[in-house]
Length: 305
Image (tube, rainbow, N blue to C red; front, side, top):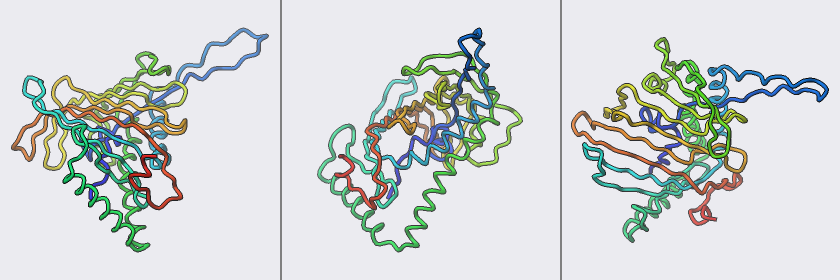
């Protein structure tokens, strides 16, 4: 059984654990109130960039308490490129992320934007039924262990974000309006004296981030990151090709939680130091629905309504 291919957990983490966004976010101009009888005062200067990032990282980590209650549809497209950058082949898969006994499960519904063949559909249905049966019959101790492990992994994948403020020297380089929201634009330069304390944070010095931060809520709206050094993971040698960048966008869902809407990453990879491939991966997330927390299981049919 495969857990959801969670690109939301940041492309930064993708290099270290399987994708994931990293960073930052937000700031606001504190407005000084004044009486009409007094002359208006000047707006207070924005928070220091490091403090902006620190608050944003804390918000992003705490977002998980809301994020984990949502189901959604994710479409991931993988394009293999030739040496000149032209597209050699394209494939995609679309999955519904549904909840089976309090844990998300990736249910394949389309391949290359086409309905599954009868043979594929039967295999997918069998995997779903087998997973449901396994979780339905587990003991209370087994269930607690499974959910505790899921929570542990997810928290570890997010916790390294709290190291981001120490990993870079940030500066505000301007303001822009993004999707109708005023935002600060921040750029970070890796600090040579940064020493990560968590394993996923080891990738941070190899990235140069640029962030669009909502002025009103200390939430990031968009993230771009340039890879500036080779990133290794397991049997892969992962190398983003020159000029490429990681990109993430997120939006406010149900007026309560910020969730990823789009992710893009392009990279060169050498598998087990033998085969070289050049890939461009794009993920889109949509149809967010809040999971009914009182339910123990939601079927694929229920998830569509």
